[in-house]
Image 1 (cartoon, rainbow, N blue to C red):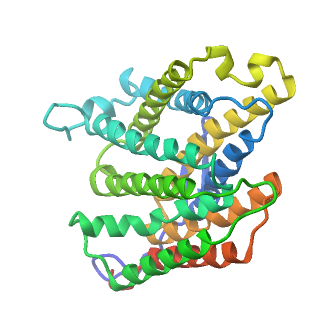
Image 2: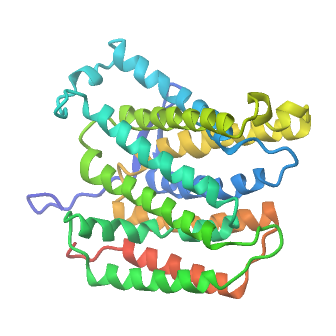
Length: 343
């Protein structure tokens, strides 16, 4: 309903360019694909640890982010070559005169890098399924942190959902997975929670500071570039501190295992081009026509997709406690994502 009381049909599709052609896509369908792509992260990383000659996590992460960064180079070339010029028209700057997309890219890239950093180490100690459920707690952490920082008041519904999530985590911690999964540990659980915290800070700062105030293409691209830079610093420090050669850090590449080399290359391409770059593009365009509350509900289904992938790819088995605990976490995050008519 517009300001004059006239009923207006809300648009459900979005016009985008795909390989230079104008295409109309359903926004809800685009967002439905995003959590499926995100869900592949934990099972795939856990799968890499099962290889005979696994690549160093830092090096793999750097390669996949380099591929993802290449996807955003055309955006920056267009902006700074005069084809668009939005980068030069940026009027919102911080005290040092930097464009908001640059400041946002630096901060958001740091939060996401720290989240992925903790996530990689967590998956050395936890199963993919367990890690996914624990990291999904970010959905409840976001409104909780918003209340702590005075951005918004925490509702009774959110407080109740948080309590249910805590109960779900406690039940989940009692289960010890078997099959293709590693034996979970307190260290792994804490790293998952730390990753969830960094993810929550990213979402909170994106929504309260940067979203809608600057170019989305430049902001997302800057975030990925910063992630890539920090990841390569991580890779260099890994080689230096472990006293290994660069060749040794490449795993299957170093020993000439063709099969595992092709697997690693394929996984890096999927993670960098599809799970990272494509999912970001789908989310940015899909949320133009889909409300944030509905988007959050769709994203809450990520643990279910991750569980299906972990069972199929890794042979992980799910105990009764994991089903109950994970169900409580997913249910609570869905409830926390739903908004009342008043809000």
